Structures are given as C-alpha cells and as structure tokens.
Length: 221
Image (tube, rainbow, N blue to C red):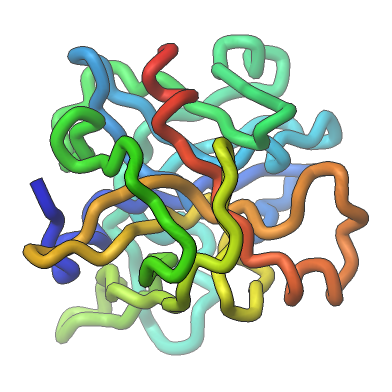
C-alpha cells in the first residue's frame, strides 16, 4: 500500500542524545509496526558511549523550542527515554548500521512493515526520496511538522544498501528513504550517509548519500 507524500511527516520522529547535561543535535527515526509490535528504527552509528542517554520525541524537544527565535513552543510527545546503562535493550546491527527500539503502548502513526515497505525489486536508476522534517509555527506559535526532502536516482544497489545520486548532507541520519510508486511512496530503508567504516569527514558526508535497506533487519525482529 503506497504512502501519500503529504502523510510522510507523521511517521518521522526525532532522537535527542544527552551528553554532559547538554542535548546534542537530533537525528531522525521512523515509526514501524511489525508483527504486532512497534519500533523506532534509525541508524546504529548514533550510539556513543559518551552519551548519558537518549529520548525519542514526536517533534522538537520542548527545551530546544525555548531557544528557537521568536516565542514558539513545542507540543511534541515523549515516546521513550533510555539511560545509557539500558542501551542493551535496543536491537542494534553494528555491521549494517541500523537499530530498532521497541516502543511499548504506542498508539500513534506507524508504517506497516508488511503493507508499506518495498521488500525487493529495487534497481539502479529508480527514483528515490530521502524524507526529513522541518518545522514552522502555527498561528498560536506551536511548532508543527513540515515535510521536506531531497530526491535522486539510485546509482548503486547491493543486497544490503543503496547509494543515491545526490550530495549527502549532515543532520539527515535516520531519515526514511522511499521509492516512487504510481500511487505514492513505498518505504525501503534509512539514510545513513557514510559507512560506519568510512572516516567521518565533510567530503565523505557529501559524497556518500547511502541508504541501508531495512527489510532483512526488520524481518528478524
């Protein structure tokens, strides 16, 4: 079942890591339903043992909103908070740079692994979209999600990952990737940028718009 482009933002969340009492710049995650369980799926390389913990929010962290220009607020909901010593509860595939966090009692929007995900038939030159969030205040100054994204063609396709023919960009880690479909979009993976075995330089980020395919990882959860 294809996803309408206008609906993509509701499946995307933000993950904030805390280090030395400071909130770090967030990464993106995608809410996924699989086998009657709900997971937040994102990149594995986000985990850093220097962090004190992480929290997953449906939008901008309320404390971050306070530092935004103008008198804006956030009504984002906290989905889960995990201390660093509880990271073992997360499901992480370090080699393929992908992880999932089970979210209990979640009743919000989530992509259906069986219905909304492209399982195979990905080819070079297929058009792909990396979708992420921007925000703008409504009439009451509350930050609301706005769809944003960058698109290109698949230039490399392997069993586990794809590369998109666009310049990569910092700050997009964990953003969901979709393939175009006659009726909308089909999800197939997450943006990781550089390989975890590639030195994290500015040139490497720009030259590596890399997508990890998520179907094999999620099918084993």
